Image 1: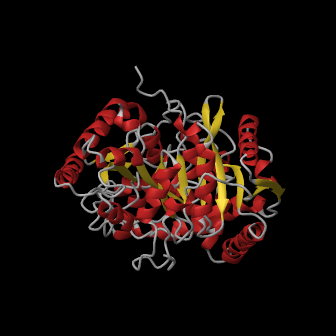
Image 2: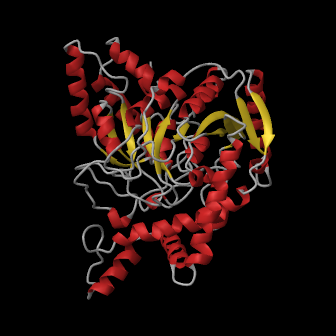
Image 3: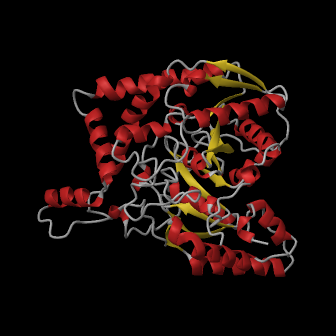
Length: 488
């Protein structure tokens, strides 16, 4: 039995029955990492000694006959923009290459309390800015389904590590689709929770009103288990919502009879790959066969989502990244003379081209004379986009679309054209602007590459998303298909 191919809940069952130990699991996953990591390049940092030490403590509990929690002893990893005390956190940027945080993010502490075992930190687009993980300062993560293709971004390392069975699950962050788009490209489950449902404390900010941490898992059951561990109010986070947290596993019900699903026609327009369109429509038919009521609807302001996002996100990025000046922490340019020169050289040498592009866009949008014309107008359009969702959810329980308009593309195919790259997130960006939850689940293949089904729900109604996802998963086999990576 290959332990690394099992889901987190299957591994938990093995631990509970004493058929496997935590140290055994950690060693199995590191053996898998040693086998495929040279090809995948998902990790920035490994924490082998720390992981084995944690696993030994879990095995001690087993030896004493104590019961384990559902994620206790399960190997996982974090996207490298979540602070980990004593472990480097780089955001895949030269400017933070040597940064070691003095504290951990709330989600890191929550999973440590749950007993999960961190194997390391995962590669990403620099400061989460990108849709392909080609913008990392350290390496280009590869898609386990085709090593010549991107895994998506910005959580490319996190998704690839799950798809390649290097970890049982991972945490990513999603600003405009950075969990869901790579989840679709690599054939895993990716959930962006409602804004404020999961603490952002200790997440290094890209765009504070859009960023949200969420789980990347092998199936929907694992997604619910991880949400049980990380959701909930956090007084350390001023944007954390003071709402009650349910047991998400109670939503794992194999039944969608009578649920109303809206299909926004604007998400099926020009630019969608014909094979992707075919796969998504087959998934819609499957949900209808299972008893869901499906009807087309309209989201009239969808066409303004991308320009709105690319004014708001860079503006917030410009503000958030102003702190990297070479003074307090991070990269400092050598022999830079006076403080102004040091500031300029440190940022010029420390940031990559995509980060610089977005800082300049954002600074321009916030500058005197342009603030009202660009940034303020974008905020008003954001309200209209949210109202589209509010009106749709008066009639429908969930909305459905492709996660991405195409399957994973090849390296270099879009990197020379930023606008083409930005359009990879055309189906996911509106969700972040509205602050609602959405999930991507595997639903088929186009040209041998995974396709993701994108389900969008009402604020704090992750339960319905999990119910529909679980029902689809239980009545199909797509989530069980694995890439052939590492098969000799």
